[in-house]
Amino acid sequence: METMRAVRAHERGGPEKLRYETAPRPGPGPGEVLLAVAAASITAGELAWPASWTDSFDGSGRDRTPVIPSHEVSGTVAALGEGVTERAVGDEVYALIPFTRDGAAADYVTLPADVAATRPAGIGHTASAAVPLAGLTALQALDGHARLRAGGHVLVHGAAGGVGSFAVQIAVAMGATVTATASGSSADFVAALGADRVLDHRTTRFEDEVSAVDVVLDCVGGETQTRSWQVLRPGGVLVSVVAPPDEQEARRHGARGVFFVVEPDRHGLDRLTALIDDGRLTPRVDRIVPLSGTRAAYEALEREHRKGKIVISVTEEDAHTG
Ligand SMILES: NC(=O)c1ccc[n+]([C@@H]2O[C@H](COP(=O)([O-])OP(=O)(O)OC[C@H]3O[C@@H](n4cnc5c(N)ncnc54)[C@H](OP(=O)(O)O)[C@@H]3O)[C@@H](O)[C@H]2O)c1
Image 1 (cartoon, helix red, strand yellow):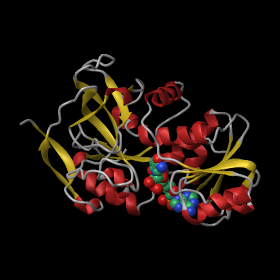
Image 2 (image 1 turned 120 degrees about the horizontal axis):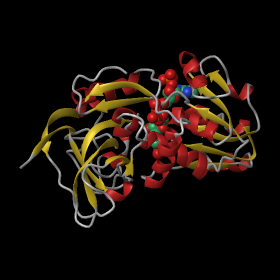
Image 3 (image 1 turned 90 degrees about the horizontal axis):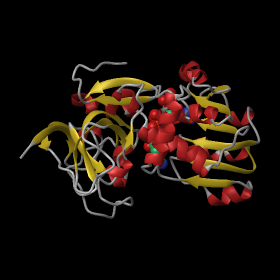
Image 4 (image 1 turned 180 degrees about the vertical axis):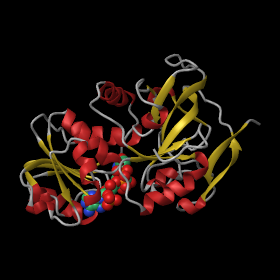
């Protein structure tokens, strides 16, 4: 049996369950590619999602332990499964890996060939690994669910985070006006992403500062979400990536509320690649850690402020903060 380095959890739990160990190297099934992972990226809350542990989104499916986390990847195609014609060995790709299968905190990962997109040529693997989950979430939220238009006004909550840092840049590229909320220590970072206005959520109540916005993108949840109805114009939309908005509140405000889970989307990645190639979107990487540091990186996600994404460099064991 061929083996590889991997980070795995043998039972459900948080980062404390993650072990850096030797695991069987997977082989690609029909319609799949095997990627040699160069870099992968991690997301807050990921280990609590039912799909991270079973083969269904509501957690009712087959237990998949031991599981490998980290579902956004940048790497090189190392082998093709039966029937794969659109990819070749040696292709450099990036992808959001479906959540109900193993992720990329390992030397190798298999994934359906049709979710892999050619990665942006002008950036390194650690930058492109930061894109798929957070970038697709922001794109699907703003373009797909909110139907944001040029000239519209969007309020992005949690703008310094993984999703928020993409959302601000994508909204600007779409021609929208962007108001953002973030910690005060991240205000300059968020302004540099292109936000027209940044509100410190610790010192300012956003509802005192903005009104009649077309779209709220909620990357925070809780009372930040419930306080957001009042800043929407009638007919506006509150899109949350954290928790389903209250339908009664939506009706009461004449607004729309949407919660969704990001979906793998090669064509969406191609759109993000075009924005990156044009210089209109820059993946923001807070720090780069080695594969052996994955557990500590998940722990850091739970307790530290960040600006952008935490990326695991799988091919460079001496990776450092970047
Ligand atoms: N549904 C989906 O498909 C989907 C996809 C991706 C992510 N998510 C979820 O979406 C959430 C955000 O993900 P992420 O990767 O962007 O997380 P993240 O990187 O941790 O970003 C969250 C940001 O929110 C900020 N924040 C915290 N409290 C705030 C407040 N009251 N007002 C404004 N900003 C506040 C944090 O800043 P400070 O730390 O400086 O306070 C942080 O920058 C997570 O819960 C994640 O699980 C869902």
